[in-house]
Amino acid sequence: MARKQVEFTNRDGHTLAGALELPETPLQAVALFAHCFTCGKDVVAASRIAGALADKGIGVLRFDFTGLGGSDGDFANTTFSSNLTDLESAAEFLAEHYQAPRLMIGHSLGGAAALIAAKRIASIDAVATIAAPATPQHVQHLFANQACDIRAQGSAPVNIGGREFAIGADLLEDLEKWPLEVTLNDLNKPLLIFHSPADQTVNIGEAARIYNAARHPKSFVSLDNADHLLSNRNDANYVAAVLAAWASRYLVVEQ
Image 1 (cartoon, rainbow, N blue to C red):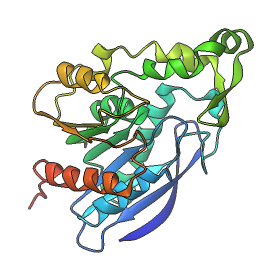
Image 2: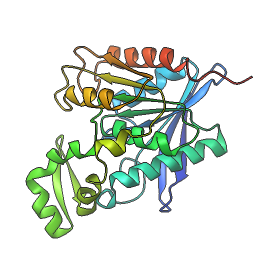
Image 3: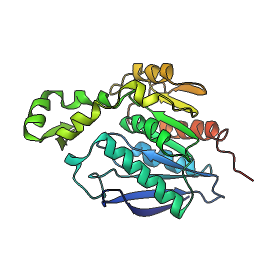
């Protein structure tokens, strides 16, 4: 496996930082990975899953959304919609310099983004979500107590997972634009849903909502006792192994 540090420009002119895992064997397909809310490309789950997929011949681009990690921009000015356009910019970068992504993977809120972005990126043939909410509104509970301050001041600091982030009013407004019907309507692509019944951050009931709303072909894989961030290496490796086997059905290399 070879890891390349890459950069590309999004539609607002910001430079986004990414890491591209490439297999030592012939490249079968490329996947695009959307990380969890306030995380980044180097979160343990993303790094381990990308590496394991590369070992199975699938290249993976993971990158920091605008305002996070090594990417430019102000997180307070970002929205769920801006995450979607960042994913589209990433797909355009891959298509221009490597090959168009065919697999979309999303973790947590990135899973909700993956469901929508997969409909907007024509090259995507299959989608997988990991510990994802059915809609982006799920994250509202993280800053429900400060919602009034955020709206009144335009933005306000919020403690999420022990770190402080400036949350903007535009994010609150934007989250309301994506009900379940919009998230999953007309996906029309094979879907694999991973979720743990022990997840304390996103309840497994969200996986049921996604599964029930999606059309076939769709599959669900229980992650048993895994935590939300897949901090146990074995859980991340298991996701990668199952994902690679499942995706091989839909990522047949054209001759």
